[in-house]
Image (cartoon, rainbow, N blue to C red):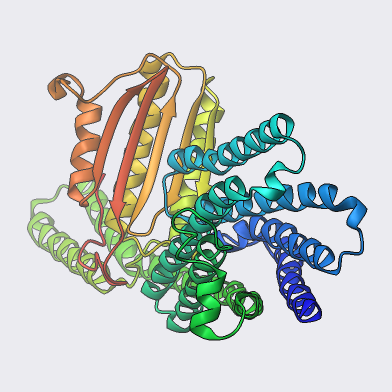
Length: 474
């Protein structure tokens, strides 16, 4: 029997260590915006540390280092606590949360780890080194019921939400892989978090290894080893998402190339017809100024009128036939970068631009929305420079699941929209009007030191949104 368990723990530990090594490599993390790829290092730390604990259990079963039992026990549970903390960090880092909320919640795994370690040390010092070996209740409650269970559930939820987002982007096969990985992490969380050794407290007195063996007629370690192998398989499949993202980027670049070609053709047509017609009308006006003979005035004015009417018709035709319907996310990102650069060149307040966009997270923007966003940000930065007396400002562009999020903050005097007289603040009134025009929300709040301007703009429903809004006036 001991040999059978030895093999199970060997396979189980190997599966998680292999997953950890694969994940920790950080494949293409610097050239992709996928949240999963950027969070893989935490999954890697979890896999390696958790796999080592299973191998330590394997050594304990063989009883080959009995003189080091207490030392191995301490190392094993320290690594278990580290692994479950990293599992929670992995799940939290994938959740679709605002950066400030995620930053706060990411402290929870660290706090739980410190709480466990403090209790572990105090109990060992007060009751003796072998107390926690003989009384595993503390480790089961904190490590298994709290950290392992919550880590598995949070990771499952985060992976499922990422899968739903990818599903919206018409990649059903990739979404299924995310959801499959979510299911297996949920199973892992339930297995490692709930099913423990039978003990005389709830729920360990009901849900335990013995109950599992009675129901399924095989030890839970076999199921755990299968889960580890399945996680490896699905994770490798999910990493193929990077290839999908690259294809998406190539497609977008091709669309931009086509759009650029359309712009070039449109520019040539405008030059060859509209500008030439206006130039001809201008020459006729110049002729009339120099030759004021009454015989020539009326017929010449009629010709000028015909030329101008033809020009107006051609202009309308170009505007209605223009295929430049979508301003891509990359375009807005670039335009805002250039806007911030120009402001930095012409005034003394340093402004930093940050962009947190993911290919899987964003939809499309109509020219109307892109243009209004640009001018809202421009007005917000202008207000910082003119009125805030700040020494620093920051512009954040972030893609969310259902909307585009923009934030402009400074460390100046600070203002708020609450109780504001908009008649005296034309710029802010204009910002709010622009946001409403495109279905967005504008919030301006006073923070500790300074002002925070938040703009939330929903994505376009289709790639042809804004077809009739090709001409945008400032």
